[in-house]
Image 1 (cartoon, rainbow, N blue to C red):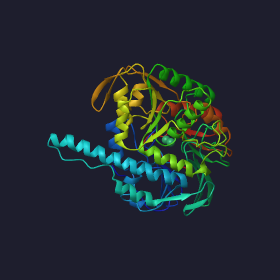
Image 2 (cartoon, rainbow, N blue to C red):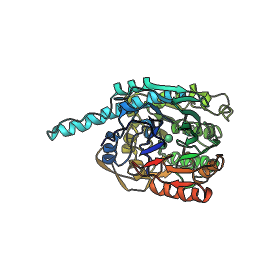
Image 3 (tube, rainbow, N blue to C red):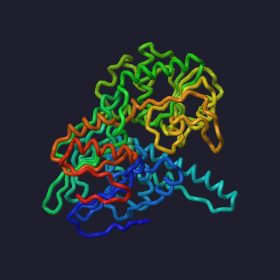
Image 4 (cartoon, rainbow, N blue to C red):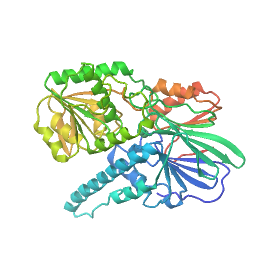
Length: 475
Ligand SMILES: [Zn+2]
Ligand SMILES: [Zn+2]
């Protein structure tokens, strides 16, 4: 269903919650301000396949009527529907420079997956004499979209539409991630609206810490882990070391499903440190994802988004993302060859939620052997294969066939790119200003509601809301 975007001057800024409302994926917020239309984020819905597909195909805004698009970071749940939007939108998509570079590879990769999926579904339909389906978007759409990405530096304020100034501030969640500060002048009143995007934990090995924002009037805050606590980092590194070591010593393989961008670079770095400290044997490590190869290059090129002390490590002077026993695999042929090798090894592959990519082949080949370890390091949305494995399912379907789970499955949320309950509370404490309204978004419903409770206790004078899909907030 399309909701037409009306024209005319509004005295009140309105935010329409078109995604990541009482759920984590599909981030999309349409802002009406000063008679202009801004779209903040344009992400994919993920998990629960059929439901997500229907939501992804529906574009609740009229692309041609938008004046500008703002993007906090390159993860697909925030950027993954941009090529679809750009089928009808020709204007700028404002983001940081590292986000532009990461999007240029991630959106092309996503388009390739969309094309492959459509091809597969069309083949199945052809057997039933049904017409083919077309992909959500193609590589051509993604190419056009990438041309529209307009890079900005952190802390460089720019006017996005008349009366709305935008500044990107470090969010510490993934390379290039930003909080979006909107300074609005509307009908003689001025206010500051802060959209957190996804907020990192701080203390990350690679990324800078999220930075506080001053003079906030309205806050739109993520809630992914608002009711949970993560383990502390040093414990996690030791735990990772112990788990990986014992699987390798038993002669098993360690399979790590990880997003190609961010988590892969982080775990490579952690394994590197553990090996240098003598806590892990120098077994072969494979990063099996073509996207990771390019993403790692982009990490190397954007030192402005990384910790300044990143190279002061145990493995001083060595490439933090490379070591002698590490192999990056780009070709599908080399990826298949891993199946014929039976010595202990670590395979890092995407996608992190196991919804697509080569990780599904590695799981298919390794889940049934009890010597192996499958180690999850990130968030897996409800309904995804990763989520089923973490939940302890004894049999899972991969490529339409059931597989018994005999391998050990472990999940560590310490390497999460998202702040936990206490870290979110600390983040809010560091914001200054008289906050009038807080909208809790980007979390499963239980997390958003719990977040609202915590914030009510912290900010008794603020109105706390948990918007539902398509709800409108007037500011
Ligand atoms: Zn993210
Ligand atoms: Zn997100």
